[in-house]
Amino acid sequence: MTNSSYRSNTNNGSDERAPAPYELVRFPDKTPSVCTPPGHDKYQSNCLHGTLFLTLQVQTALHVSTGVAVMGSDVDKNGIPLIKTMEQGVDKTLLIPGSSLKGCIRAIYEAITNSRLGVKSKTNNPPDRLPARRQNEICPAGVVFGASGDNWGWQGLINIRDARCNTNGFGVGYMPALWSPKPQGSNYYDEGKVAGRKFYYHMVRALDKGEKDGIRVQQASRNYTFSTQLHFKNLQSKQLGALLIALGQDSNYPFALKLGAGKPIGMGTMIVKITEVQVMQNQDDLCKHYKSFSNPDNEKLEGELLQQFILRHIQAAHSQNLIEEPQLEQLSQILSYPTTRQPYENY
Image 1 (cartoon, one colour):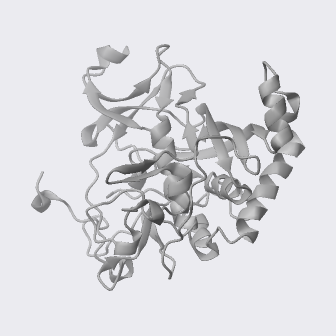
Image 2 (image 1 turned 90 degrees about the horizontal axis):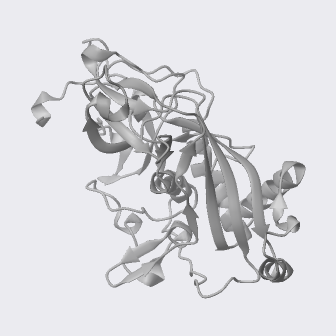
Image 3 (image 1 turned 180 degrees about the horizontal axis):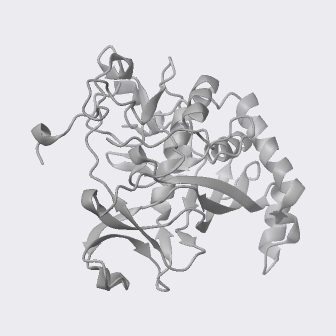
């Protein structure tokens, strides 16, 4: 499809431009922060190490595409000629790749911590926001999520397992053709450079225009849940706090994640619930961990202890100035959920 075949994003053929389904979180007015990675050679006694146990609650239809379309019979849907697929496990339950979740969370972490962009895009980005070219330029998000350049690389301090659906089977929806963004407005640029990071609004429902205007997709329907684990090591308290904020856990700035395909039409809204944390918080915890064949009970936090743990580290992220408060405020307004925003037909 060529650019000339794109339809304009206007309201039912009128001259009124449709409202953009996204907004920018503007870059801070200062150069990106620089951080020193702690290394991977040992567990640092003054850092945190452990696992967050996450439940992801689907609020609007979710499709994280494999990039492959198959015959319906290949996924046990004999009445469907063609369908775009999601990842599935050996038991045929839906999966969300850990890399997809990591990218979604990283984008938020970058926006709220004065970090560089994780990936160089084709847009005209400010030079100081491009990915680090040298090891001495690693930003806050790069330390936690990883960074690389010519002849060097840093693995990061977290990894996320593939999220497995707790519901058997899958839903079938329709993905309409989505046209190109219209970013020409002056508020998206600052002296010819992109002014910030783009995030899509949540909507009350996902638009499903049916067979005549879309292709069928495997999807996780509303109220499906996924479970996964986020493992971390050598995180400072403020870094873990910023990570918790990026998961929508700050009660002063709550929000939902937006993941997968179809974001302009309301797809991909998920709420994160932390059900448990297993954590080693000091030298004694490390010693007990390695002297036991199973995780000691003192590593496991649930209920009120879990909420106190979350609050303590979120407060550290704010008080130690890792969080850019104006950017967090902008982001929480864009990703606020629940919402009354309706999906727009022409996106």
